[in-house]
Length: 338
Length: 129
Image (cartoon, rainbow over all chains, first blue to last red; front, side, top):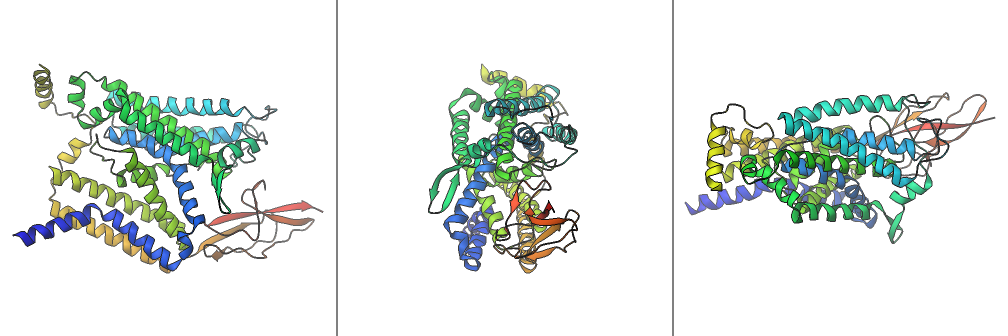
């Protein structure tokens, strides 16, 4: 009886931590095949990629804590990247009447408003009409994609990619924060850390954060306890929208261009990172540290596969399987607790 | 008193067939699957992931495509992580080849010594003679 119990415990441990085990094995394999993978340049590359995806993951984590989701995230990132690239450029294609690029704070404010408004719309539809977040954000995703395509056709651009960003903007985002040897750490790593700190305070030290977890755990109990459930849902989605906008603002400089496909499938990475990091679809559960770990581990996987020159098309299949495994493990944890 | 309120609210929602769509926990709680079956599904998925990774590792290489923008076309080539494209150039009547770039407008230039870290498409940049 005791042997059976031990076997069950080991199986539980292995399956509940299957993702971490797979990642650890992959890291060991890549490190053996390509020792440069553990070099300073590679590690800083992974940290930089993690930092670029973190604001988005932090935003979407809030939606998952509410036991929902947001599949319009990638498109919101794309729209804001395109807006940023069109206003902080030296080549005036979208707005040919522009004589100078917009001031950076103004563009940041514009994208925050755009992202926030879209998030508010999502939250409003979910809260007021009791529509499933998947349906609402699926619709929003398509609407935003249409807006992006129309926006990119404006002026003399005709759907081409936007590039030629101002040096000031590029330096602000991708300029060196500090150097480790000859490898430079970009500034957006620092910005990502600031957002992590901000979100940690919001999640753990504000009434809004506590309400978010309460609504995610048990909507009825939260309502009875005096939480304004609808307002909380709208605020979570609005905050998420603003985080996606910041991701788009950073991405336009990081990638060096923006086009209609910018942000494509970003939400799948963010959602899988959150689930890997312990933000459960059941709702009411999640930690900022979990989100960071999830994003980092996912970037380690993709960087490792990149180092091994694995075809990018195959990586889509890998991503899909990772999401399925992470969700199945999440479901398993819920069922075993029950 | 709050317990009474909670009980009352839960009684009210008990009879309803429309559960809150926001809450996935209702979907999870309706799952009629044993943990054992779920374990098997997880193992199958992990096996699938391992198979895909093995296939990926046996078919390695990034594709570098060339858009010669009016010049003599070049077939895509396969390169490994960290390799360079070497001395690949193209020609076009009335123009001199300048360099490769990551965008059609040639604002993001690509050096022949730059390391390949992903599948990319390079655009030829020309100077009129």
